[in-house]
Length: 135
View 1 (cartoon, one colour):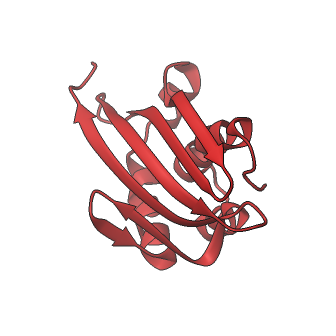
View 2 (cartoon, helix red, strand yellow; view 1 turned 45 degrees about the vertical axis):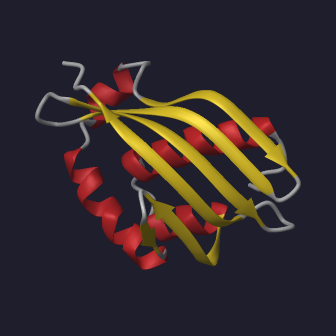
View 3 (cartoon, one colour; view 1 turned 180 degrees about the vertical axis):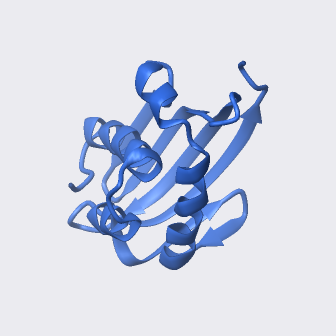
């Protein structure tokens, strides 16, 4: 799936977030669908490469309450604004993740990125702000 429109970007944020947290699919396979192999993902100043992203997904999947997220239509990515212009993308969205210990992790996220000609992601610069737990 390549990103070439606002709809593509919104669909990516929803599908990528869901697949990385809830899918049994290998994280590397999911990354390869959306990102170039040497992508850089800079989140709150920390640059994450492919291997570090794969390593990050394993504990996320252990801590997510899959059943609660599947039953809660507010879980996952809530898209507020997206923009795609040429090889640049931007989004403002909220992530809600139900955790096994009963809490909900919620963050407001601002994402800016660079795309390759085939619509895969080359770089993301992202900042997030954790919101109060919603129990």
